[in-house]
Length: 122
Image (cartoon, rainbow, N blue to C red; front, side):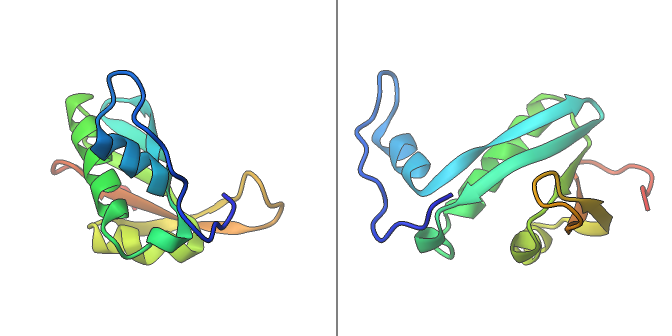
């Protein structure tokens, strides 16, 4: 995602509130994949100028709420190394490393977030 001096200005689209348009201007909504009981959080990005403003926490909470409605018990996260601390603060635990899909040879932290009690994965 390009680093911008100013966040993009955007008007709400049809059926979209000012708040959700603002949230998308500062961060990208998540993508959840998988089948219950295990899902994967594939995308959760915050514009660099908005890191530390609460946008990531709101996007995270939306992802967790959505995962619960899908009956996921845990989320697996392949994290950017710079985002690992964020996920740990949200309650995720590192379980290993995975190869990056975009940078050959790069290892990314792999974490798990438990939505409900279950057997240990690691």
